[in-house]
Image 1: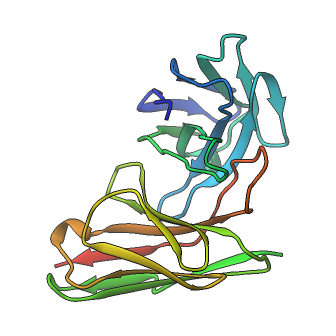
Image 2 (image 1 turned 30 degrees about the horizontal axis):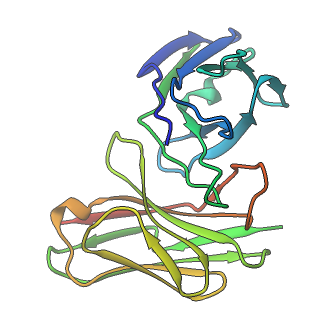
Length: 112
Length: 115
């Protein structure tokens, strides 16, 4: 399983764009990159997934460079409710199901 | 729509007592099921996963066990709890096979405190 490294914490203000970078130097050819969000005392929630280049949905964008050794989750115009822990994961596809390895994540604090 | 239930929501148990946590999924068939544990301030640790009835794989050797007696029911058990078993236990499900998706759907969790 590819190990991921991301900042322990980040601070931002309402209305700003937040970019959280994750490194995964040992990512395998068939691995996908996935991001989850977790609020206190709740289970994680899927945000976005990508393989290469850029993926965008209604919540966030995911930027993946050509070498795929890192990825950046971009949250546009954050609000107080975006305060949460964000996990970067690299999925193992060979087993036929989703075996996810969660690290300690990045704790994002959004202030007024 | 699919929903996932876990109970109880909170539990306080003495060391050495047994444990049974239950998870059920509605609105889908033959899901992959997972048990995770999250210690305070830590990331999630995958404990068990199941791809079908009676099929359980363990990720971490410990005094916990899991069973899947029905397609959409997943149970986490212990015969004798340890202090180190305290944590936030999360059940999750995903679509069988999943294709290219790594989306797992998590339940509300059970907060277990072993005293």
